[in-house]
Image (tube, rainbow, N blue to C red; front, side, top):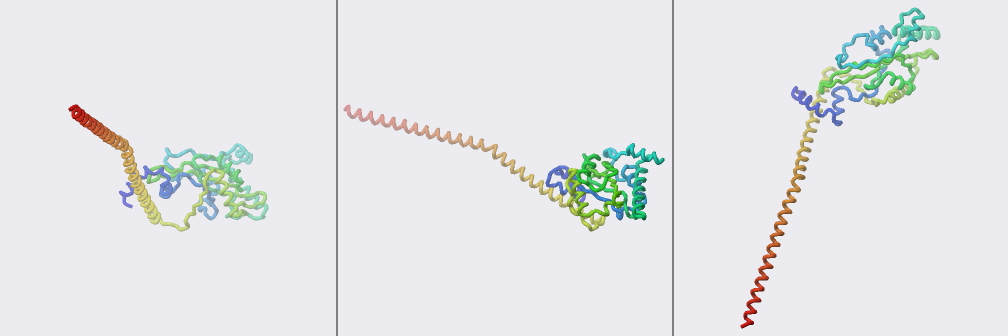
Length: 327
């Protein structure tokens, strides 16, 4: 795409970005819809990085609570306050009784040890390395959602996993190159307990995929969000393929905006002509009425003249006859 075309698109985009017919095109080009759609993604063991596997629950908490530096945050002035599940006094007291430093990280490390010990005691063997006593999920949110909203939605949807820690991030997003708007990425990192003390097994392993999918949909609906039904392509695109696709989308959008502007111009000209015709119609009507009145008056005057002339002629004839009779 030419630089001049891109500059033209940026200029015109600001005028039409709020029109419904262009919303989808802008969303595709910017990479995110204005109204976030509901999505929840679970980080399975196979998808975890080596660092995440080594760091375990401690590393997850450090990231979620922003104790670990990240490079992709919004500028400081554009960030909103994050929200985290608090470390309770009850949890702190439980650690103090065991002479353990009362921190949230230590609480979860101890919790994980208890789960692994329970599994080993019941099954007479250690829990497999790829088993996850805790699983993390990332849930898309809207700006107004809170931790309490998520907890209520989990309860309302009868979600099969218990949330033990929730972190809502409101400090991520990106700047739309086209409109210069900041598009915020509101989401929550949720740590779920993935162990059933009654069956002494991890919960997700025993869940039917279809059933679990329905649970996720109920959760999204309980949050008042629209379920994302878009299917992502499994085909991986290179950097240059992505750039090419974005350019094609931008060219198509510019063409649509130009066509829209032409249609608007035609509509304005048509309305102006109608307005002119509407304004001049009374004047034309008045002019015609005046002309008709003048002609009617002229006809009336002519009739009057003819009548007067006839009367005069009749008088002359009568006078002549009278004179003839007198002779």
